[in-house]
Each structure stands twice: as structure tokens, then as C-alpha cells.
Image (tube, rainbow, N blue to C red; front, side):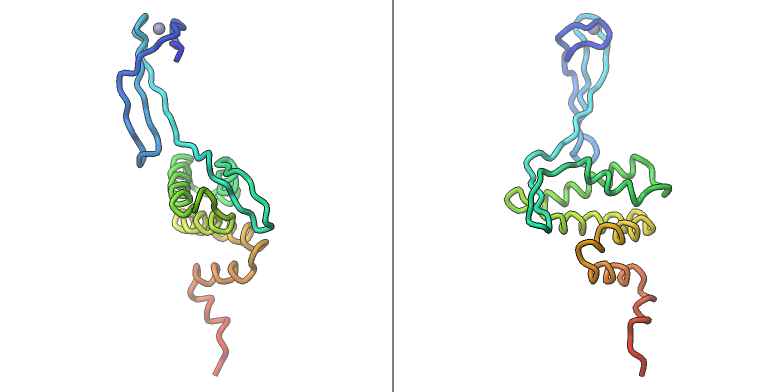
Length: 160
Ligand SMILES: [Zn+2]
């Protein structure tokens, strides 16, 4: 890497540290010419995963798409970018764990995202469920809402 200070081509890595649940690597670097010190952050990016859509088509996994789909229901909710980043990491770890032969379905990604969103913020969870699940499965959406609020289950029961 080029030195930010004197633009020497060759900088030295003096320390490598794994941070944030092992998903991020920080390298401390020093320029041998001017001794300017800085660090670089490397984040793991999933590149080999294929996402199977409900309509039968496939697309390459895209982290930005996941982040966008989480940010939308989190609009105006009191969740810091750092917390969202941690949740995205957790979701991606579970996506990798649940993937089979480098494939995962949009439904599974949606379920994983919902699970973590539910723990993070219930308002965002309902928004997510109503926007993303209703397109694919109305019953599952209703079921998800029932699980969220046990009181609502009463209204579905028959009297007598
Ligand atoms: Zn330098």
C-alpha cells in the first residue's frame, strides 16, 4: 500500500489483529521512509454464494441488498449504525452456516433477517415482516405476527 503521507510505494505491516467476532481484520502499517503510521480495516465479504429466488431464478449474493432491506424498516428507529453493522455480521454468519453447496434461498435469508430484526427492534420487525413476507406467504406473515404478540392469538380462537 502507498504511504498516505510521503506516497512511498512500500509500507510495512507491523501488527495484524482480528476484531469483531473474527469477521474484521485490522492491520497496523508503518511507512519505512517517513515512519507515518496508520491502520487498514479488512472486512470479510461473501463472494461465492448464490441466492435462489422464489420464482426459480438465481442471483449472486449481495451484501448491499441485505443492508438496504434492513435499513428500510429501521427508518427513524433508535438503532446506531454500529448496532446495525453487528446485526448484519450476525445475519451473514448464519447465512453462511445455513447455506448448502454455496446456495441459499431468499426465504431462508428473510427468516434469518427477521429473527435478528425481532431481537433488535420490534417496530422494524413488523415493518420488515409486512413488506417482505406478505409477497411470498400471507399465512407465514400472519403467523409471524401472532408469535410477536401472544395476546392477538385470542381473537383467532372460536368461542364456547
Ligand atoms: Zn511515508
